[in-house]
Length: 356
Ligand code: DAH
Image (cartoon, rainbow, N blue to C red; front, side, top):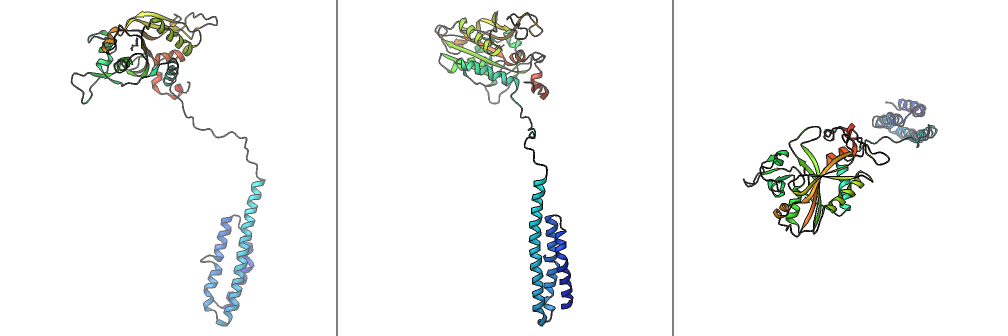
């Protein structure tokens, strides 16, 4: 390129760069335009690369011109950059204001405790407040803790009634029969075999029987409650039951005991509470579908701990006495919430569970 053609290119550039910069609508477009002039392959850079071919006497003057144009381009670029930012800020300020009063985006629902857990926690809270401590225990249990030491003879019909899941436990002695516990009453045996009286325990937990229909599930939950001390009577038992019914089912809920049989209590009873569903403002309960028109709903079994149980746990029944009760949590949840089919509790349908 001759020095005169360089001068021509420089003049053309000088006459056009400002309009090119001003025509850029965005910062990116402006930077692209700048790069076309000053970048590695830019127009002005190309001229600089030609400088060596210019005769020495003209080189200085051309160099000065090129540098002058370069400075003008750089200044214009900075000015346009500032102008673009200012225009953007102005547009933001003029735009419709951000509405702080708009409702927030909905957070995905977190879920909540299962109805069985809700009633379990409530019952535990009530009984703990009465002075009972929580006692844990295994779901895979020895036959002797689940049945034998509770006074079930080997051929007792209750072992049929509580048709069991028998399991083999690796490494267990051949004569140690094991099963999934059929009730939480095993904790009576475990606590009484490892603690000196007096004692007052509750034991919530999972239990298993080979049953499956609208009112029985093969896996279900119970809470056991028992107290061992001197001179314990049915009155203590009834006091705890009455307090529990008042607090769990509501003030004024009546309790009645019906004689019944369980091998590990004597006397034994089943407990009904006044049906919460047909309760009238005057306190009467004329009967409804839930209580099968009786006004009463059965919720648990109970009684005075049988001397045989004390003896099998190494406790002297002449000195010590006690009461025990065992409650089905599904049963209580069904009564509490008016659930028509117990199996709903285990289907995990969110449309059902969301209602609690
Ligand atoms: N274990 C009994 C059952 O599962 C319930 C029961 C009845 C527990 C009487 C007790 C009791 O502690 O005294 O059917």
